[in-house]
Length: 169
Image (cartoon, one colour):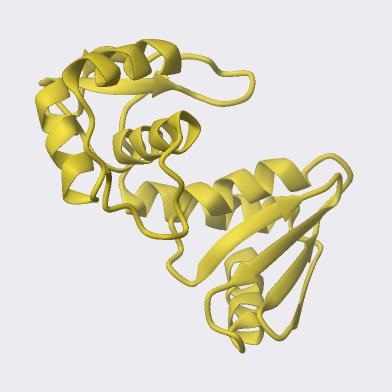
């Protein structure tokens, strides 16, 4: 029995999503280190299960920024090369660049923000928002030219819409 938060089921898919999130957020050198990090989040995983999950996720070991071998997952979309952990600075810079290039409008209502993009660009922008790890963002849903963002704060939509407009400047 795991101690996962009520919002996170103890399924294989949820476990692999947590593994992906941990590997995206920090440089992990070994399966033992990954098991400890997951355990700290209340997710108990055996070494055999972790090994199978890493194979299924396509994790590979690559030379990290500091020269040590770390686990990396393949990028999403067209670039399938293994990606090492990016700093929050890099992720924020990427989001700013994308907002400047793709954001057409940002409007809010309560805890929701609707971002408009050119046709075909919404998924790309939503993925960047998801990867930017903005603590105020609960989640995103993207269509062809529209991104819906739900904020954690019931009245946080206006501030977040303003933030995206600032990023686009």
